[in-house]
Image 1: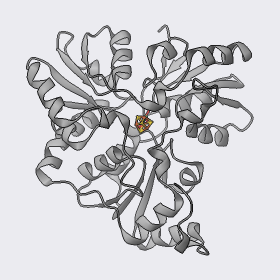
Image 2: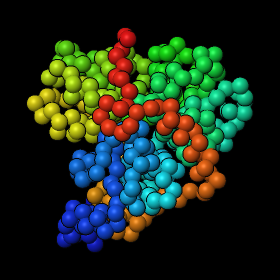
Image 3: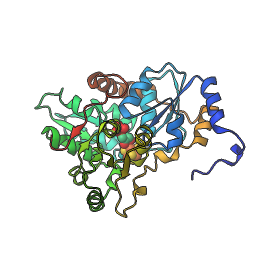
Length: 333
Ligand code: 13P
Ligand code: SF4
């Protein structure tokens, strides 16, 4: 799937990407779940909220988004005058797939007294049907600003929604979507790993199901997990999210040991996001060279999707960067 494109053999792809980045006045944004070689050449690596803020504020002419489609779409919604390219347009997300716009519209219509608080991992059409967008790092801050008796639909991630409901005591109607990556962690294997490494804290993303979060010492967005990993005095940590984030941890704290939480077969490979993996250095080079594949959105749809995204940016507070993505949430808080 990711073999080098034959016609590119012999090219120094890293040098070519560097040349094109300058020639195009492009910024390369990457999520923590991208392959290490992509993270290493990006101008900015971040979680979903930081990447949205960066996309909204960049003065580049071209955004090369190394992440999945809903992230690149978000960049285009917030920065319509920029060319936004995604190295592989097939880079979707199981959460987006779980939530077709027509079904979501019908769900909303069936609950007219509820507002829709929607996870950013969804299509532009579902964003356009939502009141406020949230990311895993901004959801709690935003929820705290809504009246306690406000009825809320939360979609499409039932695990994040369930975690927020338990943490805040809110009664929310949950859309039944899941992230296939975080669903794959095995509680049995995690408990075995914890027994092998007594005292090693478990760092988990709230897209994990409750039976994994029950064993977590910190639950947070990718950025919050990274911040915790670097600040913690622990020498060994168990990481229950997509394992490519471990690259940043190992770079910043090479003396520490970060162990990816296992899937059911005891091997964490099943926890690699297959959508994120579609982006490669070769495809990034082609995207910068050809300015394609490009994210294009109908203007009416873009404007409708922009409203709930702008509410998120206003309500989340803070600015891009370390420490701006919400206080880590400790299990048992
Ligand atoms: P965050 O980077 O916001 O924690 O999201 C994780 C994720 O699954 C992105 O698809
Ligand atoms: Fe979607 Fe899960 Fe992949 Fe994130 S890790 S892009 S939520 S499938």
